[in-house]
Image (cartoon, rainbow, N blue to C red; front, side, top):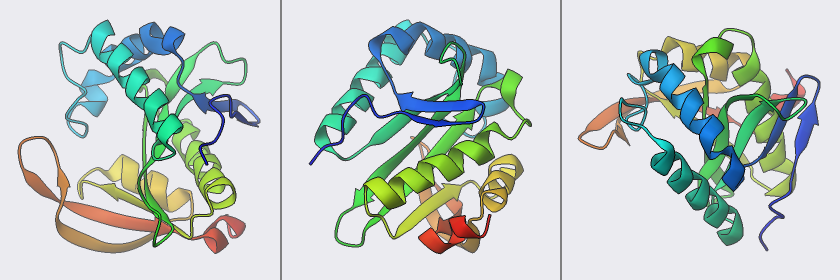
Length: 187
């Protein structure tokens, strides 16, 4: 059964909520601001990212919620007025009760603990609302910032998986981290 599109997670300075159509302009601005810091890691974060791309992303996220397969949240300040980044659970495996967790934070908000806190909140959502037993975070091995975020959130490094990430043009190795419910109790 799909979860409601109005799901909100509020904790201290952060608000996680599903994307809405009126978020597209803020998403476009955050991506354009962040091309220098995120473009190396995220193949879709490139010059030319525009409002149409942001609107398409929001539509796909809404469909993901409706299908019960992709649970993407915008990360906002507690007022819901400033977009800080994005986080989501996808690649859901119902049989093994697992999913992938991806995240990014806009350049002007990086190195402030936003991603670490958002990872914990999204993981808790996955464990409690989706009954997941395992959440994977897979990043390029030389993406130190994302790897440190995973570690600070309580995820354990498991392996460098060969050709685990497809960047749109080629397969690349991925550093695989995992969270299980007990990991959140330790952070």
